[in-house]
Length: 98
Image (tube, rainbow, N blue to C red; front, side, top):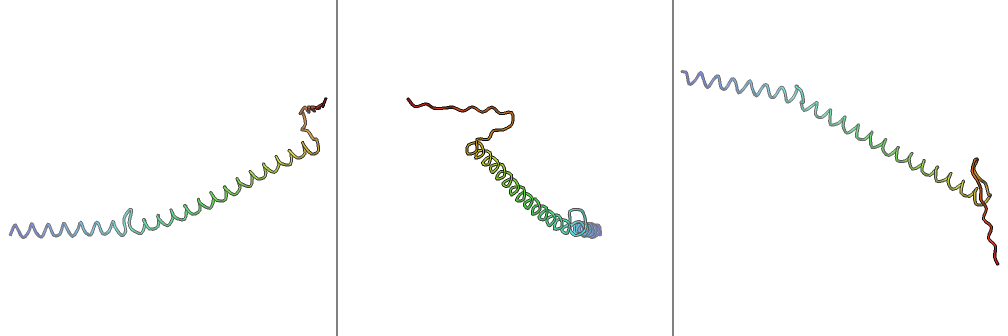
């Protein structure tokens, strides 16, 4: 009889452990539904971050283009029109041919 009682207790313990682990798997912390929810949220955040990186890259390229454009305009104003900046000293070098 002691052998049968021990086996029944062991079976009950195993069933309780299985029930406990099934509960944790489906409803507890880090359950499958939470993992799926976190994965979806991570995917959405990653997509949002990539969109913002792309937007920032576009804005950076636009800033570079604008700076280069201003430099080009300034260069043409200096060489073609002889303009100088405020508080800037202009030196003109005259070449003489002998």
